[in-house]
Image (cartoon, rainbow, N blue to C red; front, side, top):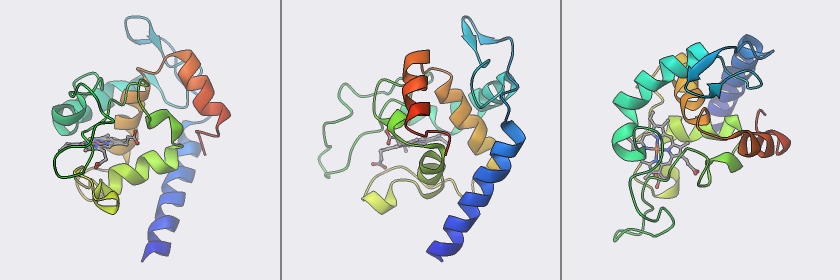
Length: 152
Ligand code: HEC
């Protein structure tokens, strides 16, 4: 089961990278936001903003800025609050494979609160959601993430 899941994730990543590279982005997604040197396109960011608004924003904030004062501070039940995904917290330490895995499995493997989206979103919608929150990462954060093999 775990093996099959891993294989499925690897396949999803491989097909997505084939589809998405070389970076095809050009133009502006929002003011001052460009997808020019990124793995995703402006269209993915736009599609992702809808997915994010409906599925993610209530916990992670409309612009992935987070909704709690301190995302490192455990809640009463010992779990962590939803962190910002806009580059200010920890998400940029994870390569795409791991980001996708979190979205698929949610927080359950860590005893966390995030719901699993494996069967609730299409692969396209999951990648779009990642593109959307990554569009808030500035070039420095994105560059660091790439250097840490983020696109693996
Ligand atoms: C009900 C609240 C909730 C919703 C809805 C939700 N999340 Fe989360 N998310 C969390 C919490 C809480 C965590 C921290 C891990 C945990 O405890 O589950 C988290 C963690 C993450 C992480 C890992 C961040 C890191 O720094 O390691 C990513 C990526 C993420 N969420 C993406 C998403 C996306 C994309 C969506 C929408 C498709 C979404 N989340 C919807 C609550 C939520």
